[in-house]
Length: 292
Ligand SMILES: C[S@@+](CC[C@H](N)C(=O)[O-])C[C@H]1O[C@@H](n2cnc3c(N)ncnc32)[C@H](O)[C@@H]1O
Image (tube, rainbow, N blue to C red):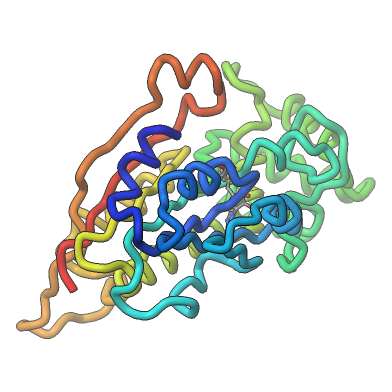
């Protein structure tokens, strides 16, 4: 928390964006640093975040219920001083059992970040083919026993629809042979959540938008929790080709440079690890835009 705010707010009168308001912890700290001339625009897909945001009464704060992949619709080019992206799921989302994110609490299979998302965990588990399930578990969860779990899901759903988190978690526990330190359902649950909420696609779109809306020397702070997000960010800063031109043939004279450089990668301090166990897999990257 402290490191992200210290690295983000470099101009107290600037315009800032918190792409992932969640329970508003980061937004509240950003606002403490700003003068009344500085402004904070926060986004989240979650209707619960909208309710929490109403407690913030400051005039220089605005909450919008929208997907952060759309942020370029809200700002002009080179307008924003800093953007925070704290990827993934929030603690209140995991802890609220009816949201269906937790493999420890019984609830209908859901896992949507917000009600506008059309897909949900029940649809995926009961309708995706064995190949589709295998590929999601492998690509988004790096689950070693992907196909075996996918096949078992197909067998079970023939008998009865798979409806709840504990049904799914129990099925995975029975199917997996290999011992895991974490709950055996961890990787599959992560993979399903990423698929439903299109986390990879949204992150890529948002990175493209940042190239436009950030000012020169503006900062993007990105907190990631697993290697798939890490890979997207690393790819984004290490290549010479901007994201929107990837996979396209480039003209000889058009090899543009990435607009961002990495200023720092920060891991949680021992103190933070003690007070917030879930921070253990977090990585904070500080990027700076160096070109207009
Ligand atoms: C790790 S939490 C953020 C916690 C927040 N920094 C805080 O201090 O409470 C991630 C949040 O991002 C939201 N989120 C995930 N993907 C999103 C997207 N594409 N657009 C908008 N919000 C998103 C989730 O709903 C969740 O509330």
